[in-house]
Length: 185
Picture 1 (tube, helix red, strand yellow):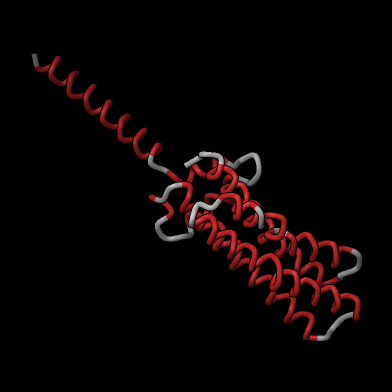
Picture 2 (spheres, helix red, strand yellow):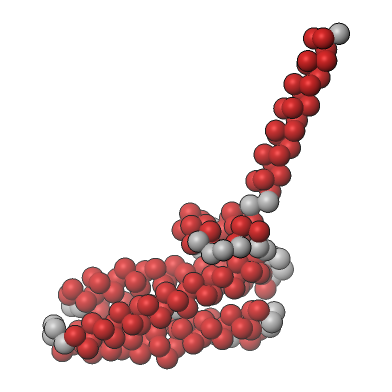
């Protein structure tokens, strides 16, 4: 009798552990959202960035979209500020300074405002309006790479890191927008 009771308790305990393990994996909304866009964004990057936002662990995909848009806008503002600082420092060749001014302009007048507007439309679930801004959201990173690609020297190297971060976050926000707007929660 003791052996059958022990065996039953062990089976129940194993079932409980298995059940809780599955429940916690199913409750990982960040991993779920990032897995949904893994064809467009590195899932580990996506998870790391979303997990840095308070409340992301229990948020749904729509909230993750809004978080990604906020992260991308903040990254774009940082990149724009970096370009403006390097351009005003005046060290380097005039072509690189012009390229840096162009980068700062693209971030400040195109991508960052477009991301903020897109976020507002996405928050209101106005998918058509949010999608209409997608062409502008990643424009600065692409334009900055192009402007500095041909001889940007140290400026090109410095901007490459912030442009890359921005590009990944902008792509993450875009992919999440498309996933949510297409019915992906």
